Image 1 (cartoon, rainbow, N blue to C red):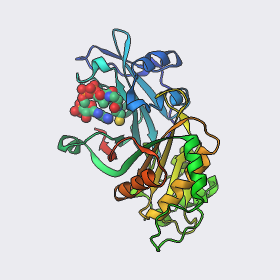
Image 2: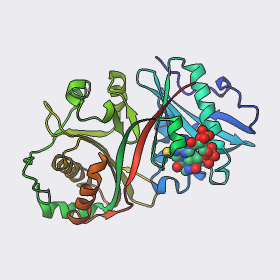
Image 3: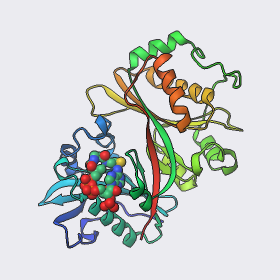
Image 4: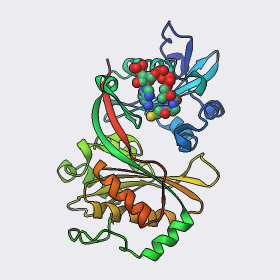
Length: 335
Ligand SMILES: CC(C)(COP(=O)(O)OP(=O)(O)OC[C@H]1O[C@@H](n2cnc3c(N)ncnc32)[C@H](O)[C@@H]1OP(=O)(O)O)[C@@H](O)C(=O)NCCC(=O)NCCS
């Protein structure tokens, strides 16, 4: 299904009568207002300042703003993926003074209605949450998959030195089962070949889902087209029979402070040694030229969280920013 570029405001449905909100499609001119209401969001790891311009250009995405008396008070974006069958909700935020009054709920329902009327092929809404979900949420959502979130921080220069001291395999647990061998970087054609072959990736991807930097994709050619446009390193242990696969973003700036970068690594698979080898390989590659502070978020199979966290603290000497949390990919039907 073809999606029009950002919808003109006139094509948005009316706001529900019981609210005093107006809804508009975001434009470049709204950037400062959006940043003003996004202070300290996601613990300083907000990706939106870096991504906003790109988001506005993406032909399958619409960024919607809620306004109260003309003032921007909330944002949500919807992306149509999975061959036009899924609406992915991203970037949801409400201005601090307006939280707890039902604004997010109204905005979410407005966006679902908009998508339903414009794109009747869309059947489900998917989103990723890292807050505590209770029985109320699970009445609303089906769980697609969950990954543990490991958040560490370090100075790029310090980690570079530490990695050089360690040598290529030092520090890896000697479990005697997995001989260390170099992870394989995949080029775009290898990525498609591997990830579109459901047989090869069946035991690697959780619930047949590629979760990349909070975005869940089904392994479909149209989604690979979206993913391959991004700056991502794709890695596996063995291209003909993979056990572990990982996707790492190139570092990008986040507003936590000057010279702070964010590195996102999504790990799929259950073998600890192979996970650590790929983790180290991504770190080596991306810290070699970087100067400044790095927040590195690793998403991995929940039982691997503790041993990888111990490795980060004890072998790499990096600081854990928070204890175990989870990323839940959930979906609900569009009704
Ligand atoms: C999370 C946040 C958007 C909630 O806004 P809010 O206006 O206070 O929320 P509401 O009063 O409408 O009540 C919560 C509703 O939003 C939903 N909601 C809360 N957090 C949500 C999230 N992260 N993703 C999707 N929906 C969420 C609730 O399930 C509830 O839906 P319901 O109306 O169907 O019951 C707001 O606290 C915020 O901006 N926080 C900082 C940014 C953030 O954490 N965003 C979440 C991105 S994953």
